[in-house]
Structures are given as structure tokens and as C-alpha cells.
Image (cartoon, rainbow, N blue to C red; front, side):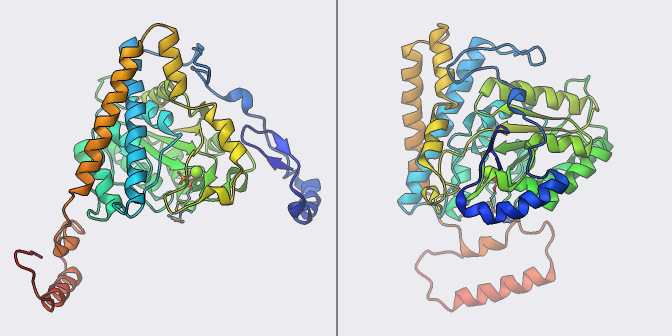
Length: 404
Ligand SMILES: Cc1ncc(C[n+]2csc(CCOP(=O)(O)OP(=O)(O)O)c2C)c(N)n1
Ligand SMILES: [Mg+2]
């Protein structure tokens, strides 16, 4: 028996029957093979895949037609930037790229719910959230081209640098949240109270760091929102290898609320994140949001998902596309016309061309720049390495005009 996304159960394939035998012995003792709860009815949704608006008493939406059109624009543009980045990697312009395809609504919905003063701790895939924080997409490309260590000043955009070490940023976020709590910056009434959001994946929930951060955030009532994008895969490992229960139910065991939202529904992602951030600001502590979504592309450009998952799964999720449902909703309700959609498509082409051009023209950094921004203060070891590397560079004949 296997736990499917949504809590349904299916029989295990024949190849797993041996393991299944051992498991069923175990399950007689502990009922391990049964999902603890069927969560399919718990999915918070405000916009169906068919573009129908649903009201939810706990999640009223304070967005105008213009706001939703803006969100549609964001969704289309970040998908376009992503598509360009994949193409640039294929052309040798980027070393690697981690695509957000399919996760646009989770990122734009939650990203638009943030107040300017909130601090964000991303993984390596949050290009949509970066967009919402005003980060030039070209800065993201610099990192994946290997010409920058980071690309932006975290405090300036309230958006931490990308983190590749799976789950590590949940500890950074929790520590930061405890810090602003002690600084007295958390305040639900003034309107400028701060909160923290941290992004991580379904696979990351198995990491010690994530579980430790849950403990700390819970017992110190830290103002942090744990935003888990459950895209069903951790490279080639499926969700059922991470948890016997729906991920959002983990939060309860740590002592704070968890909920599951349709991660392909931009309105629902916006509403639940806004509410969780408000709760954090009001001193109610952490919330875990499980955005139930799907990684429609490869894990990164170095991965080939056809080796480990069925094409039919992707086809099923295409019907739940996060952009199409907003388009249908706007068109059907008369909140946007064909001219609007055509203008956005035109803008997407221009943004894509701009990213392409900027990437191709990106200068290589001088080699010695690798030592910049490593530590805030100089130190002896770094200084010695710097001198050693400079001496090494001097063994090459300097090209005219080349700097180090
Ligand atoms: C501590 C650590 N272990 C392993 C890896 C290799 N790794 C990179 S991405 C990844 C899977 C992460 O899956 P998930 O948390 O679901 O995030 P997603 O990539 O699906 O967004 C792994 C294991 C890593 N980067 N860091
Ligand atoms: Mg994942």
C-alpha cells in the first residue's frame, strides 16, 4: 500500500512486494502502512482548475480586478523568464537552471502576500518570489552562470540569498524571526510590524534542519511562516518516500497550525499566506503552509524526469495549470479582454529578449573577485589564499587590458 498525493492509497508494484511483506508484518504492530488521515477535503481552494471562483469563509480575498490582472501578468512573465533561462542553459550560457515551471502560483500568490518589511528566505527555485521582491531576473542568471556568489543585497530587497543546502534556510529564518521578535519589530497593530517567510520543498521536510527549526519556532513562538512547496518530487524521490502522512499535518506534532492549499491557485496561496503572516505579526507564532503543487519540468537542467516518472502524471497536472485558470477566470468574468492578454504576451516576449541579451553580454568577473564578500572582516587564512592565488595568476602572461 502506498500513500498517494491527496491521501489516497494504491497497491504497491510487484517489484516492491518483498518489501511489502516485511512492511505488512510491521503494520500489524503499528499500522504504519495506513495514512493517518485523508486530507483531500482539507485542500484550500479559491479558484478551481476550470477558473471558477469559490468563496471560503476563513479566507476572504481583498483583491481588485486590477490586482488579479497584475498577478496574471506576474505569472506569465516569470514563466517566460524561466523558459528563457532553460534555453540559455541549453545554449551553454548558463551552467545550470532550476525551473519553477508549474509552481508560479505558489510563488506569486505567497510573494504578493508579503509586506515590504517582511524577510524572505528562499531555496534555489523561488524565481517568482524574487520577482515579487523586485529582484532583476538577470541577477538570478548571474548566479546560475557562475559569475556571482549571490547577486543582490539581501537587506535591500528583504530577500536572502538562494540556499542550495536543503532545508538549511529554515534555521536561518527561525533565528532571524527570533531576532526581530527580540528587537520588538513584531507588531500586528502598527502596520509596519515584521514577519518572516521561509520556502522549502517536500524533500526538505525529511531534513534534520527543518525539524529542528520547527521545534525552535514552536517553543519560542517565532514569527515565521513555513511555506513548503510540495511539488511531489525531490529530484527522483516521490513524496511517499518522505512522509506517511500529509506534510501539513506534521506541524501539529510540533505544536503549531498547518494547512494545505492548492498550490496552483494563486488566489488561495495569496489569502492563506497573508493570514499566516498576519498571525505571525500578531504574536501567534508559526504556521506551516503546504502548497500542493507539481514540478512540471525537470528538477534542474541536469535531470531527466522521463527516467523515473510517468508522462501521464504530467498530463494530469497540466489540466491544473496555474496560469490557465486565472486566464479563464478573467476572460469569463469580463475582467480582461483579448487586448489585455495580447499585451501581456507581447510584454513577455520583450522581457524574454531582454533577459537573453543581458545574459549573453554578462561580463566575466575579474578572478580576484572570488575573495570579495566572503567575510565581512579580513582574516589571515583568506588573506594567505588571496596572495597565493594572485601569485598563481601572475604566472600567466597577462592579456593586454585584462585585469585580475
Ligand atoms: C543537505 C543537502 N542534501 C542533498 C542535496 C542534494 N539535493 C539538491 S536538490 C535535492 C532535492 C530537494 O527536493 P525538495 O526539497 O522537494 O525541493 P525541490 O527541488 O523539489 O524544489 C537534493 C537532495 C543538497 N543540495 N543539500
Ligand atoms: Mg520537491
